[in-house]
Length: 352
Ligand SMILES: *Cc1c(COP(=O)(O)O)cnc(C)c1O
Image 1 (cartoon, rainbow, N blue to C red):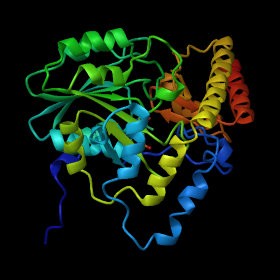
Image 2 (cartoon, rainbow, N blue to C red):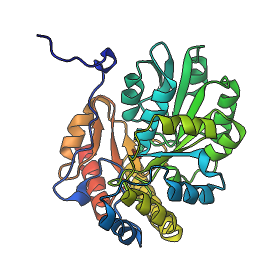
Image 3 (cartoon, helix red, strand yellow):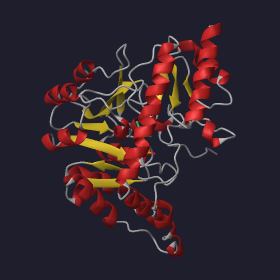
């Protein structure tokens, strides 16, 4: 008897490896989570949905799409939400790619990209980052063939930190055929302070093939509720909605997301304190002699190469995210824990 076998596309796909947990959650600097709890009013409005969880959620996500429409001054048909922007990316790639197609992304970049891309059965082209850990958009443009359907651009790039510049992305888009989707993954856009950084929404206004990905998981601090969305031309947004399982975003999550959008002032204050902490960590680490690339998200990157795993183990009890043979990503967390991490990094340098 033969046992059931999954599609061959799954053979090379690793199971997603989450950041290591920590006994004290404040010590978890491995998943780019927000150290702050939910924004004011969010818990109350999410809890307000608890008494009616016998009902399916609003599959049309009308209140959420209206709120996003008001925020971005776009009609609601420009949005497609899902259980995190990773799920939205899975849906987008499933809607547009199949065996025989090609998907291009930079590497190293977000760990979920290879999984989402390979699942479609398409071939992938990974274009190495430049020495300063930025996207090599010229090489990415040169990698486009007539089979390319989607190019993924992560700005700021997880896990290395730098943004893609608006001028560079504009020049890139001028070279991309109109039928190729360019995903601009802006999971960390709220933390960006570089005025030259790419502006996905402005690019979307000028290019019908641009899709912007945003999430409530990072700056908004709702990682546990799973809400992310795409902003795209209505036809593209519709293709993503078609490929998304119905009723996937709960009413709790929708209510929390909408409530978070109503707390813009508090959000800005929290993000600002995380950015300040990032700059403190960056300055301290560079002062120790580390070669840290530009950090525009809520994390910093240490290019440790073959020492990545050993360094991560030496950071105990602080949990960081190593990528074997490449480097270690450290999230900006609680200031006291960040300081502990900086001290551990200094101790490492003294003996290496
Ligand atoms: C965290 C992250 C996301 C979003 O994750 P969700 O929790 O699924 O919304 C998307 N892209 C990148 C690059 C990320 O780091």
